[in-house]
Image 1 (cartoon, rainbow, N blue to C red):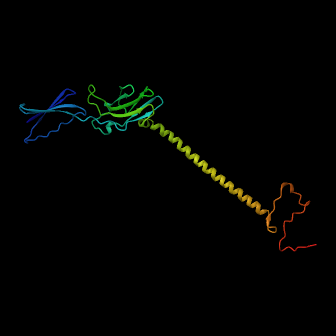
Image 2 (cartoon, rainbow, N blue to C red):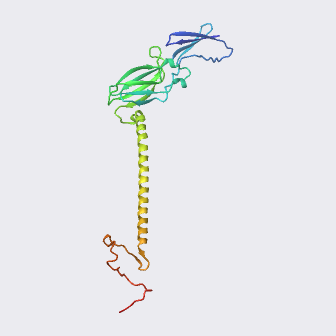
Image 3 (cartoon, rainbow, N blue to C red):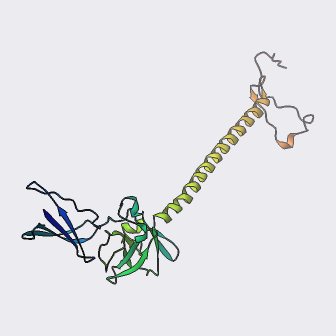
Length: 251
């Protein structure tokens, strides 16, 4: 017979379990330990004559996933996925706590807690670099906390983290620029097609006009100026040459 005592060093509570075995090696599972807790486990013989002990720390709740920043006009919004999606021991009523570190001032501030999956941060100073952490809310005087998810925010707009903070804004710009460029390309294409069709039409019109003034007898096309129109009876037509089939008369 063995007595297994589990002392919760955070909550200051004790639990004792009795274990019976006929083997020289005993395996016993202690359940319902809280994530991020600190415990002192003592195993004693049934007559309390000898004991062995050890201190253990349980694994804390994992950090929230997909932490991101969306910038607004005078504030930013922190977003993340619910821990309840991957942590069965987490209840949304416990909530999250948010911290901010200002690297320029070298200070860390506690911004507050929330049971939602977003948090509004205002009054950020231009030119300061910030680090935001979101974690499962700590219990019992800052103990039994969850692992923090950290995201950098560069207010100056330099560096890789600035792109993360302003990804929403750049996406909006791209959504406007791309359609405009497409419309410009389509307009230019239509303009080139219209110019080409007009050029072909003018060329065909000139060819038709030239063919209508061509004289197969003379072997050339005759064009008259505007001054000569209507005076065909006043002047004799110009003789440009003789054809082989026309008889020549010499006086």
